[in-house]
Length: 242
Ligand code: DGL
Image (cartoon, rainbow, N blue to C red; front, side, top):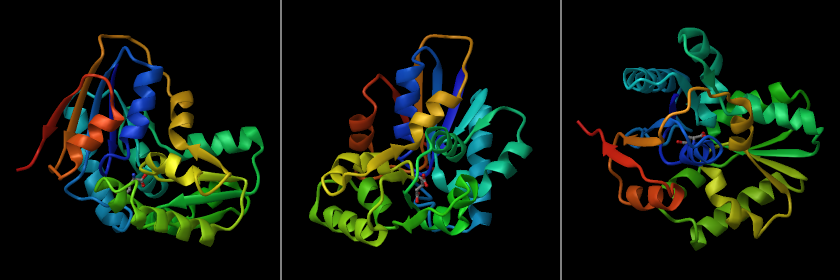
């Protein structure tokens, strides 16, 4: 099958990576919108325009199923996009919420982008109060390759302090699993990666030879290095700058 996966930048590669590991014999087309990054502070209207442009691109490339590998688009636009397009669309929120419910997890905190937090979609779907913290500093640090820096350590400590003690933290933005090791130095909470739920909730038939095509809308200083550090299979990377 041909699976289309998208996000604002490299974050969605954390989802793509787990999909490829679980279902290697498929064709993957990834779109990272580095030109319009970050998504987490954009209006819902702007996000809708960007998401539709990307989906149309992925459909034109032959995508048969779509994965919204972005917490911000998933929390604000999933229903709208699911109703608009005819092919199956998987988001990142519903699978993790199903996992939380199935496991009966309690005492939950959420780290996510400002737009995801202000939508309160996590709280609404989980059905009981969870502590939601917006972490606008994380995505720029991750995209610029500053994961193991003092600035990143400071940001982690700041958001953990705002959150207070919890047993579980949902990494509610697909960029944040890239901070998992750094976060684990300062918290013993269970860090939940939304990609694990996506892998369980997708069903793929028609195996084929593996092919991974990665498209980005802008070349950025750390892009190729970041991608190489996340995806260790062979891939083709193209920049779509116009
Ligand atoms: N990785 C995306 C998310 O899951 C977008 C982050 C951003 O661009 O702000 O929310």
